[in-house]
Image 1 (cartoon, rainbow, N blue to C red):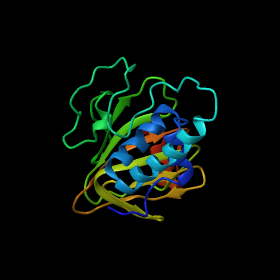
Image 2: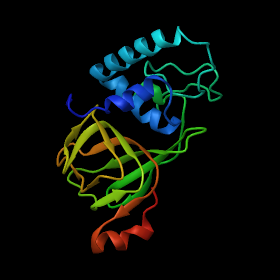
Image 3: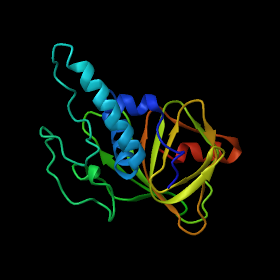
Image 4: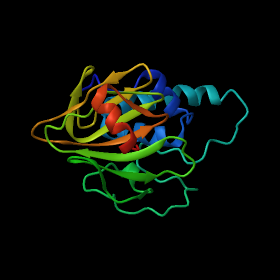
Length: 207
């Protein structure tokens, strides 16, 4: 696991304070469960924010934000269940998973229902050695790698790492040639494939 590939401090602080969209928060929560350094930073942010809260009048907290400890929020209407995949983070237990469906050669996805989320949340699985088309985004693409690895212009991302891409990033991910890769993705906006092949694929792929 790489300690370099973690969410920005701003993202971790927003997560600690419950200020993220539920879908984006789920991607961060999965990473925090897997990464001890990010978990420590979240606890530090929570301690600082808690000290500040002691000085103001209390207000109701946002509902439905995933807890990095893996505990289901008390008011979540979805009953806890075993993870949909073996060895998945506990924070995924409360959520309903759709079936795997192919979106390319040896590439498949399954949607995750996150009530109230604006971001689309899904798992993505790619076979060993797959090169995904060069693309960029009109919003956020936050990814927690659950198993395997991939690499692109910004580095190599292995199990437990967090890839925090936004509209300023464009990349061409290549999946590990031995392990393949399974990851959790929260996405806002659209994927914009680049190049002639990307333009051919654009109408066929809906993430």
